[in-house]
Length: 163
Image (cartoon, rainbow, N blue to C red; front, top):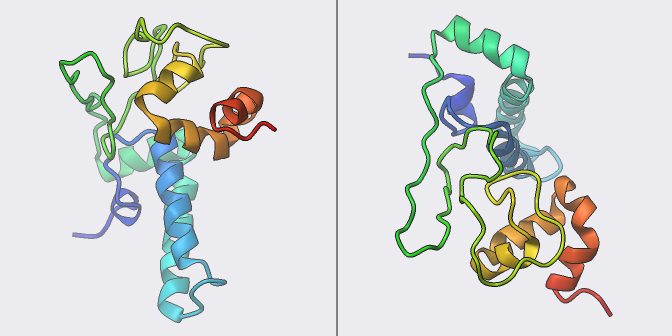
């Protein structure tokens, strides 16, 4: 059986755009011609670019899924951990959140909210100090991600980057 674009990027057909983008960037760094000039890396990079171009565009992805006979099943969401802490989905795919909170659920009561709540992602509705208490890695990632630009001052303060 031929490899699908999902196989090329090592994601499932239920992967959201954020995960696809994250995986693509990681693989592109690894196989980029500046890092690996071999013909095999160039071929792999070409595959990655084609897969990403299709899967990152919602209309093109829909057409591709129809051509491949892939059905979009419901999202796989990690169950609550039972101790009140948010769970991390890791490689599990997430569906877009339409409610007031992301997949981590409502924010914890402690620490008290300080600052603006996030408007996207698994911690939608949480403030950065609440996210930092449970998932420092997410805060560090957000400080490097494009979507974190509007929270730059708060992120720098949390990460100790303010003089």
